[in-house]
Image 1 (cartoon, rainbow, N blue to C red):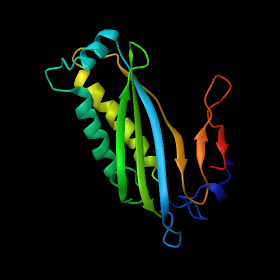
Image 2 (image 1 turned 90 degrees about the horizontal axis):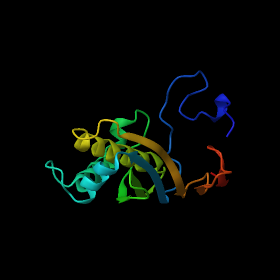
Image 3 (image 1 turned 60 degrees about the horizontal axis):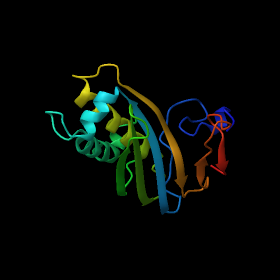
Length: 175
């Protein structure tokens, strides 16, 4: 993507902020999947997996926070449209003894995409994990929040390249 001002859709020709007009776009099915991770001590991950925090089940609270945040994305990101979500899924995995990986998938049938909803869901789920666990691990870190794929829309599908030779910003597909 070229950083020319013509490609910055949230600014008009004079540089003023604007919400993109999508009224003339056709509605279509759209999906976005984002991931991120929270790094922590292995002991913290063990407490999460064993549901041993006095505040409750960390992952279920984080899941609900992520879903709720996706539904409020338009209220959090100034120029986002209010998108009628048809689904939001937030899942967790443990790829390493000190990592909780978060994956969020958002879907809609609308005139605009749901990338921001998936990214916000991952971010807020991660921050919720931090909030619930900070009493035992203040060096936790939320990292790598990124869009992995999206489908639908006039710009086509996007799938992030993965692997050691895939620099940030490179993708496969038209997106």
